[in-house]
Image (tube, rainbow, N blue to C red; front, side):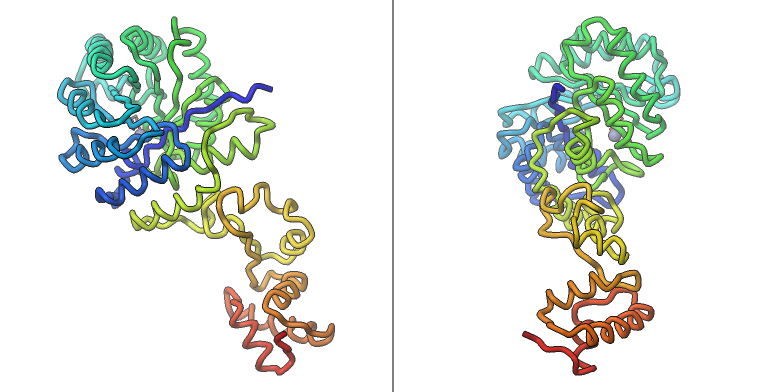
Length: 389
Ligand code: KIV
Ligand code: ZN
């Protein structure tokens, strides 16, 4: 099967930073951008240069240090936005202007207060202007998933004719579902003339918890760029999480025969960096990067893990940059994990002593949520049955 390459477009520093409370200072942004580059992210959306002088400076500084990833800035469909964006990304060897306008009836009527024909003209004007300033232009149909199909086709056709190389169809409000979104992408491929001159991109929000599923469904339908963020940071419920997209493609290559250029071993580092900088903690049960993603508590699972990790893990912790899985001792743990813990802590006990210690461990685990190494040591020390080797 062909292993098509998916372009990973990271927008942690733009859409991610729009998450309430997630703002980052210049130094922090430079640190995130460097790590994204090291990870092999293809396109880094570094900010929205017109938004503030701080945003402009951050985009410009990032453009000055990143050489291997394309540096992208966001711009509305106005001359000021686009020119300011071009100025900010100028230092970058690889640069992109990402310009957007809303195309859904709701947004055109209430937000833009523009007639559809005027929006269509603005698509041509904005992309033409951006193309005069840089070679690489991405155009986005904001609220694309709620846009009327004929109109969306006309806008996409106009953007490609004006020189856009990437066409992004955002699910701005996280409203779509996988089969509908895949059908939308397939419809554009089927109906828009010259669609092969551009890469189709998807940008999914997570309001219904479907951002990753929608993105992967769209990839199967022909999209070849996925926009995402570290830890799924982003407006409201966030964007599709980079780590979930990338590990989904890597782990299920049998069903999703696509590759990315991401060094997955840097995923945990990136997650922790973004979480520390923003102060936005990662939920423990978050896929791939949550504290519990490679932790096992139940006795049955721990026993399986000790026999063969593949019984309860579909990817290795090392593949995302973690040293090892953890067997957490708690009230659901069984003898196998307890014995393993004793061995790791250096104890060598006879069967009867282990049995006795295990009973007392279970009593303790009923009273205490997590049983730490120190608890086990105290348990054995107290009873005088342990021999530290
Ligand atoms: O969600 C969205 O529609 C966006 C666009 C600006 C791409 O973030
Ligand atoms: Zn967005």
